[in-house]
Amino acid sequence: MKLCRFGENRLGVVRGEGVHDVSAVLEALPAHTYPLPEHDPLIAALDDLRPKMEALADETPAVPLSSVRLLPPVASPRKIIGAPVNYRLHLDEALEDPNIHHGTNIMPIDKAGLFLKATSSLIGPSEPVTIRFPEVRNDHEVELVAVIGRKADRVSRESALDHVAGYAIGLDMTVRGTQERSMRKSCDSYSVLGPWMVTADEIADPSDLDLELSVNGVTRQKARTADLIRDLATLIERASSFYTLMPGDLLFTGTPEGVSEVKAGDEMRATISSIGTMTVAVR
Image (tube, rainbow, N blue to C red; front, side):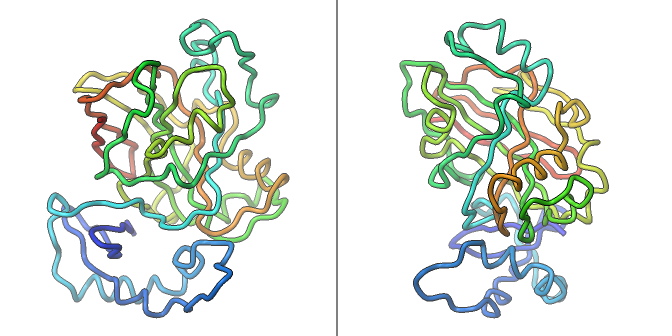
């Protein structure tokens, strides 16, 4: 199933080139009072609500995808987790290019660990990435993103993928400089998620996907998730050893080689096999 959010916080099931409004299922979610829950309520209830979503999608007419504004498919992640330099050739280019490393110590992922991005940086593909510091280099980074589906606390690599609700395309936008990654990657609009979430049962092996990004029609990044230095299961194991992962948390798995600058007026097109394609403007 492909699940999207669109318009004014509507919930949709994507089939072909259309989206079926299944927002009625949201009425089944618990009404929360302060303090708010430590998870995304929809993702936490996804397994229970899915049969009703499928039935509603059968009953409601499709609206053309091209006519709707796509929001991030996860509304309320409590954590956005990133995996730095998790492709070998990207590690090589980061070490060699001073416009990327800026004299900082680029360490391989096993030494660097993971990092967190501000949840306020999250947008959907219909919103533009807004360059906050045009006087410095701002780069695109296309990534496979896993959406955590159930609580994961110190889980093993062998059981890690059982905790994934689904997958989406991510753009981990980056200001180049000497500041900590979490700061340079947390600008408003610098975490793009979309175009929808494909449920985990639709993707047999997240380590067997093609990903590609082009800017203004020119391909800049092209790789396979098989090239990851540390695969998704390992990333979940390591992340959950430090902090409990909750439904709706997002895990960006790393970007391949080919990162480069974007500027206002550019258009990025990101594709991951078995998920789809999203086009994102830069302003």
